[in-house]
Image (cartoon, rainbow, N blue to C red):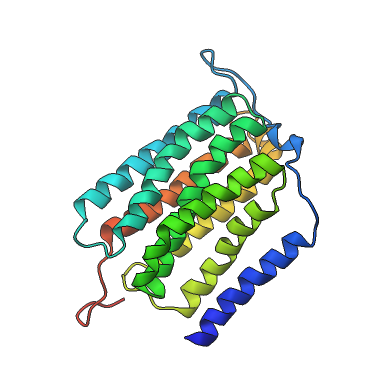
Length: 248
């Protein structure tokens, strides 16, 4: 166990060293330039705005699952905050895409950071130690704080460290530790959707041209990301606690 935890700590340390070795990292203003800016019914950047409704739907579905399975979830608080944050990504991201700039991006990143940290605490408590859920509040503050540090200082390094160190250690946790629940493979499916979403984000303009301006890579990113979150919703709904009578 100690060796496994050391590997996790080493990964976090390497991520921190990598980003802090780069010097101050500002938000590139080209980030706000999206391929599809077409309006619809008075909504600017309509597809990038409207596709955010999927996050609201998945978040509300997840909250319903949490309410129905309240006695079967050992880490209910973490999943509650995760799905609540997902439902808030919808309006936050829509606000950003309505008028993309550094200020509106804050309201896009705040719920995303909260959701990611809540999911990370849920994952850690399921695989390593249930008592670790007591750090949920600290983790949420860390996620929110990383966004505000960027907003105040203009430096993205701490934000990147919080995000990427968590993301890098998730596969390690899945490989090194056993889950207390069935359907662990759904985490892998969700990660695959996330990877595809990031790829389409990078290929925003290329996908927009390839689809003859039907849909951009960024709009497709929203759809794929929401699909990955729905996978987690299904996992929480359908999985069972592993006991001596349950096959993992």
